[in-house]
Amino acid sequence: MRWKFTYASVTGKAHTDRNESGQDFCKAGTILLSDNEYFIGIAADGAGSTTDGGRGAEIACGTLYAKIIDAIRDTGDLSCITDQDIRNWITASRDAIVAESQESRRRLREYACTILGSVAGNNRAIFFQIGDGAIVTGYGPEYQTIFWPEQGEYANTTFFITDEQYLDHLSVNHAELPDEIALFTDGLQNLVLSFAQKKAHSGFFRPLFDALKKNPDDSFANFSAQLGSFLCRNDISTRSDDDKTLVLAMRMTG
Image 1 (spheres, rainbow, N blue to C red):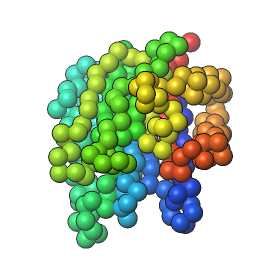
Image 2: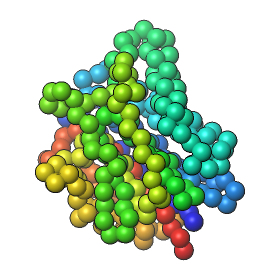
Image 3: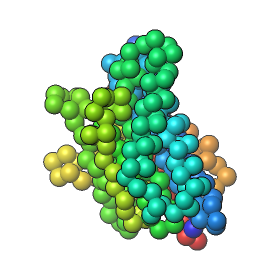
């Protein structure tokens, strides 16, 4: 078994109109260990009201990715990874953000970001999340959300890894290995989720995964660029002017 994946992160119109950088970040890849290939996908969304939310998102993704790689190499089995291990990964990521905020002499809240994570392989998958955005999995033709986007007390608010009570808002799920995995930040959630039915729109995900499956293995960069162009389409941008990040992965058994 192997994994095929792609990802793209684009800056929303709300930022480009103000000549600002995007606040999203993602990191994805695979690691081969004892003939088992594991997929790792991380996405983060820096809070729009911050000065360094994008940097916080980058630090969180990079630290989490490294921690997951170490855990896979140490255990070789996802069933050995506990909820406490995942809390430790999250804490290490937050500590890395704290260290940079102190070095830069900036308030921690200026680095606020959400986090979405997945690691899958060898018949198991682990998902975790703080804040909004969502993780969607496919088992056959149907798609389902792992966690529903967590909203704050007021409209357009959520929770962040930099919050004092960050672990209180950490959701973790250990699951059977899905056929397909999608992670996306909140710039896409209103387009691809039905909040009335609390379901994912299969009509959005099915064509993307079909295209990924057909895409040649040696054209990752080209497909990623196409995905980025898709996320910038007018019909999508007019419905959401926020940054948009999408990570797609599917297991290939042939």
